[in-house]
Image (cartoon, rainbow, N blue to C red):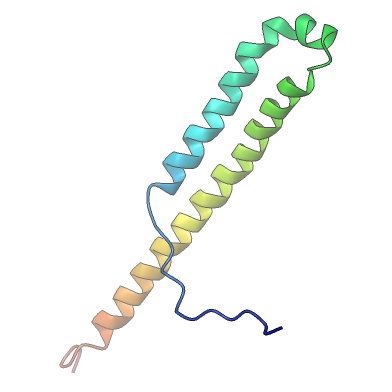
Length: 96
């Protein structure tokens, strides 16, 4: 059997409002946790307390995700500014 190999180039990754998307998802996880919290007794009686903890874990992981995507976004902007600065310095007649 032949090993699978791609027959075409992979598409460029989609860029969008990543920070806003991750922040929105994190808020939703925390809201779901807070909405379910008053019903803790019912969840405990029916063996579904993991629903609450899953929402809390989603919110906590979302906070890590927010930190990560903000750092990534800042690094992308720094690199673009550095590349633009380098391209501007290499312009013909610049500084000579």
